[in-house]
Image 1 (cartoon, rainbow, N blue to C red):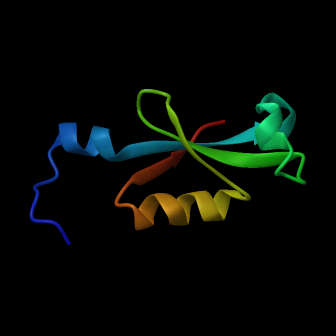
Image 2 (image 1 turned 60 degrees about the vertical axis):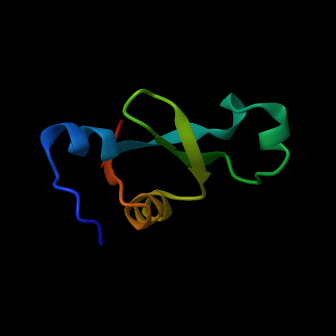
Length: 74
């Protein structure tokens, strides 16, 4: 547990967005490693993709384990 206070700015920094991604939209080298039609991506508040995972539940777990606050994007 950290000693930092959760200010609105800090919460914004920790917010990540989880969205479904079509495997076909990914670079070929990534597609070669995936055998699913869709996966889930975790993005920072600036839109940078920081992780790809197999399913939505795993995306939320990974985010929370890394002290991030995940929200869904449709």
